Image (cartoon, rainbow, N blue to C red; front, side, top):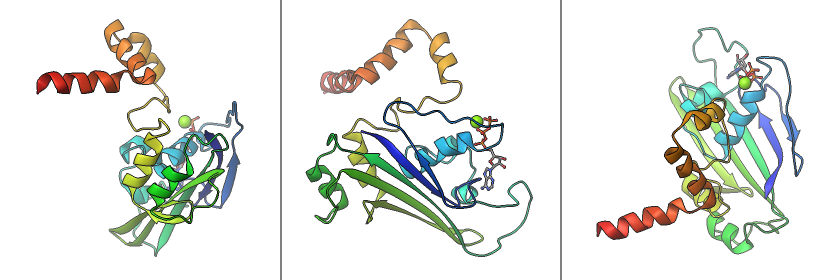
Amino acid sequence: MHIKELVLDDFKSFGRKTRIPFYEDFTTISGPNGSGKSNIIDSVLFALGLARTSGIRAEKLTDLIYDPGHDDEDGFAGEREAAVEVVLANEDRTLTREQVVSAAGTEDVGDVEEITVRRRVKQTDEDTYYSYYYLNGRSVNLSDIRDLLAQAGVTPEGYNVVMQGDVTEIITMSPYARRGIIDEIAGVAEFDAKKEDAFGE
Ligand code: ATP
Ligand code: MG
């Protein structure tokens, strides 16, 4: 399974609908400082519910909505909304139809060749906002998205996203701590945790 396309709509610096295609093997994004490269990564973490707001470099969720005067201090200027859609290629059925049906809570999810996860954040007032998630067009909760993605090995604790500074951290950490990362990637850590629990009982 891999990301096939991102659709950003009023997310951070993307003030108009932007489609970004991803290749199956390798895609790089280049551009000058401040052009929005990291915002693209933030959009994936936002849509898949993989990071806290601070993890996507915002104080509050509404900071993620495109604001032409982003760096100015100004008040609420009317209802606005940001949306990000992540299209996952699932030709290999990393996630089965049953798994998607179960997460979406309906049979009506299409053929699951593609899985789309979409998130919107809508601000209606100075300090009122709503957040919505959709799976193949059906309204779901964050926990449904989390549970589904975990079945494909995508978790907030995982190493699907290597952030700026992570590589240096891995190089400078103790061999024991580094072993922990390898265990996590190999899927062994989960069993170690279960073993610990069992010994504790
Ligand atoms: P670098 O090469 O320095 O890492 P980058 O390409 O990763 O740069 P980003 O951090 O993705 O750049 O983009 C930063 C820009 O996004 C800043 O100019 C900032 O003002 C803008 N930005 C962030 N949030 C918003 C928003 N809500 N509305 C408009 N612009 C925003
Ligand atoms: Mg950056």
